[in-house]
Amino acid sequence: MKKVAILQSNYIPWKGYFDLIRMVDEFIIYDNVQYTRSDWRNRNKIKTPNGLAWLTIAVGKHYEKINETTVSDINWGRSHWSTLRQCYSKSKYFNEYKGIFEAFYLNNIEKHLSIINYDLIKIINNILNINTKISWSTDYNIIDGKVERLVDLVHQTGGSEYLSGPAAKGYIDESLFTNAGIKVSWMDYSGYKEYDQLYPPFEHGVTILDLIFNEGPEAIKYMKELP
Image (tube, rainbow, N blue to C red; front, side, top):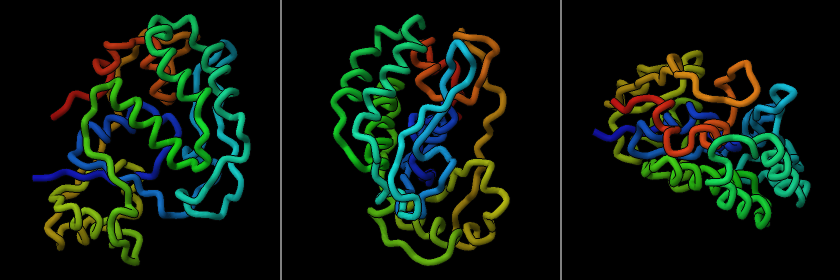
């Protein structure tokens, strides 16, 4: 049995994104599709003393594929690190992880958004001890059809089960997977425990960095239990 998930790359995603990665044997970054504006590709939410705020990477063209999209401000890393430091320096474990993220943000010269997201996902996976295989949709042949393409990608990996986020229930035809001998499972993002978070009220839908800076080695205890 091999479980596979397929999802676009996000910028410093929330904990649910990493739970999806944790629960599969192979996670495919689906980045040779159209970049979507006002989405999670280039931004995420953080907690600040004044409430929630977006941390956004400015990009150039908005009509390209995700893996073709490039940043438009070479100083974005310094700006983001300055904001993260200001908002999280008082969190319990900030100093423990400061060096890792400071080095990334201050030294990053990568222009492609998808690579930036991937590099951060790998750093965070290492912190959370997530060892799932990460691959790219471009590693495989791509066929036509929104859902047919997903079925074929899972088939090419040798997968027998596809784990999807609940938002896809509106368009996924499960029979296409069933006919290919692939089981479809749905991620459940309910039931997360609250942790010691700065700046009440508590908010689940923020970047995973919030959990890491506040709970450090205990972060995994506030994520989903593996089946």
